[in-house]
Structure formats: structure tokens, C-alpha cells
Length: 396
Image (cartoon, rainbow, N blue to C red):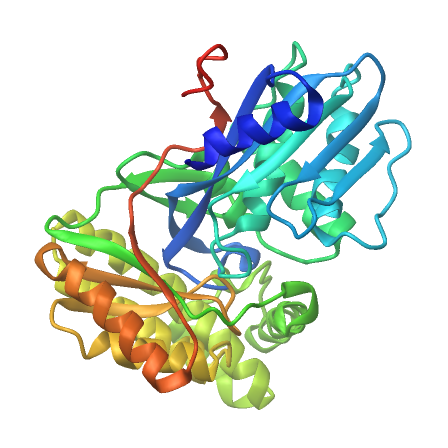
């Protein structure tokens, strides 16, 4: 039984009728451009063919009853749309509540729903399951209203929910990719202008995700600390350069080298990563346009070195996974994806080597760490939307 069929079956079992609407929102894997989004820089993600799904029917009141089917014991949250506060026990519920809270400020005609959530995204792998949940929540709530926000507005609203309601100071990339992903292509996002361009990936290669199964939780990691360090580096660079510096993207590498020695060591290294990473995203887009898979892979490797040494965002498990991947035939590049400190890697692999790559990486990683990994090719997917499905047959 696939995720959609399971969701419909469980919904009917719980609520006694089939759902009226189903929304989906994909996770994402970022090919290059890590920790640049909240520095108003450039990123290059793909939305992937693994999703969060929410099935729902309208209620006659303003309450939301929503069950997380994949959580042990099927936790259910209940709240009123006109009285939304934090849930003190269920972490996942605050992503839903936060989106509902901010969406209710835009949309005065939100209606209550009975809903159920299911997903085939591994949680904590750095594939943006939280952003997918946020975007899927916004999509299903709006499916019962006459008004619809555009994709950029949905991404901004969901980011606000994560920043201010959940308390994770994430950038815009995850929500943007989930809301506006392009089938069959990456998107290069300008995180200041909130615009993007489609990037067709080099031919003959496949994107493979390898989850270390070392879970990460941004709210409890060094993520917020890194963001503060970047803000402090931005302020000091503006003073040292004698110019207005709104964000690290506004400092060239040439300027940075002139004044880098005057920065505290930790701020120097954080800034160096962001400034050089923005440059790597631009070079990767040009390499893709030339169908230069080898150059694209080299840039991914350089990104990983910077993330490990300058941003200190890697982990022993990620380092092991990447070391194994790079030793495999046909692997052109491997790096952590998502914030780091656990989670997954993204790999660029020649098509003919994908099957052996997945098998060998999983086997060798377990031999070296004792941890079972999830290793799988992914395809670039379309962004969030309402699923067209046959209610009578329960099929998409």
C-alpha cells in the first residue's frame, strides 16, 4: 500500500468517510548553497519525489482535529483557529499550529477541518520534512477557502511560522523549494529578491540521497548560533570596510581577504564559508548550463570542505558517509545537505553506477558505523498542490 492509499484508508477508518481534499508538499534536497539562504544569498535545491500528504474534510466549526499517522500511537492535536497557542508536548503540532496562526491573519474565512498526516520523507534527515509539513498545512487549509496565496507568499508565511512560532531561525530556501519546485530541474533561488531561475542539471547523472540515520533537530543544534555569528560578522565587516553591508552576500571575496585578519577567528571562518559558497552556487549554475557534470561535482566537494572546516556543520557520521561515497565508481561529488550536524548527504552519480552506488554505500556505512542507512536516488519534483484523486476508488 503506497502512502496515499494508506492515508485515505486510515482517514476513513478514523473519521468514517473518505477525505474531501488531499494536499501534498515535497521535501527538498539542496544541491549546493548551504547556510547562504538566511544570509540573503543563493541556493540551488530540487524539490524531491517524497512528500508530506494531508487528507482533510471540512468541519462545521472553527476547530482543527489533526492526526499524525506516522508518529507512534497516532498522536492527535485539537485546536481552535481563533485561539492558537503552543502545544507543549507534540513538536510536530507546532509547525501546523504556527502556519494556521499566520494564515488566519491573511485569510478571514478559514474553516475547521478533520485531517490526517502521512509522509514518506525520513524525519530528521535534512530533507526539509518540517518545511514540507508547513507548506502542506498551508495548502490544505487554503483548499477549503475561496482565496489562495501565491507560492512565494506561502513560503514566506511558512518561514515566519518556523522562525517565530516554532523558534527555529531558518532561511527561506526550504519552504520556497517545497512550494515552488520545478519538475525535472533545480531552481537557483536569490534569497533576497525571492526570485528564481530554472537550472537543468547535467545529463547522464542522477542525484542520490544518503541518510546517515543520525537525526538532527535544528531547535537544539548550533544552527541559531551560526546565524548569530553571521549577523555579527556582517556588522563587523561593514565597519571594517567602511560601507553599508546588509548581508554577507554584499561582500566580495576580494574585500573579505583584505580585512579578514581583523575578524575574530570564528566569525572569519563563518563569513568565508558563506561568501565562497555564494560564488560556488553561481559557478555550479554555469557548469550545469555547459553540461559539465565533473565541474558541478568538484564544486560540491569544495562546498563540503568549507562546511566541515569553516562552518563546522558536519559530523562523524556525515564525514564517514561522504568518504565512502567518494570512493565509489561514478561518484562525481558528495556533500552534506540541509543544515548539517547529522542528516543526509547529496551525491551526484553517473546513471550507470547508481544501483551499485546505493548498495555499496549502504553496506559499507553499516559496516563502519553499525547504523543502517537509507540510500536512494531522487527525482526533481513539482512543488506543493492539491492532489487530484478518485474519491470513489481512493486512487490518485
